[in-house]
Image (cartoon, rainbow, N blue to C red):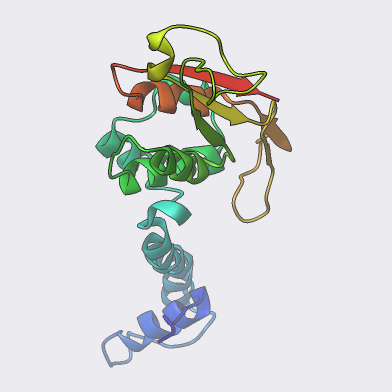
Length: 198
């Protein structure tokens, strides 16, 4: 079902139609009364359009006006996104927080990073063992059982996208600060998280 869209002329016609009957209540388009009603019509049209946009803004992945409410609900904005994150970055963080069900597996962290807009791989490390390890593996003690490495591109670019970005935003932003901050916040306490950007 399509939501009807009403113009200022539609509202002016409706307002004029609601006037009482009688000689005093003229319907002449040039009368002061009808022109006054016509000046009110654009306000009703803007309210109607805002009500329609509220439906799409209510969903986190398409939110615009309701981003502050979503952020307040989820404990955002936080220092992870920096001082002036783009609308797209704010939406990604909101969606990632809402859909985050928690976990400690590699697949959980890969899904979380993807929701934030990053492509990563996760490697669980282990100490070097003769017969199992190969050249290039870590040499160390049992502490390597608690190290896991996230490999990500050195620069993850978030381009300006028509329909998703807003006027005044940069044509592209890059960096991995949100990824590092969000994964560090969820990293199990007994582990050591290592980032490798390449």
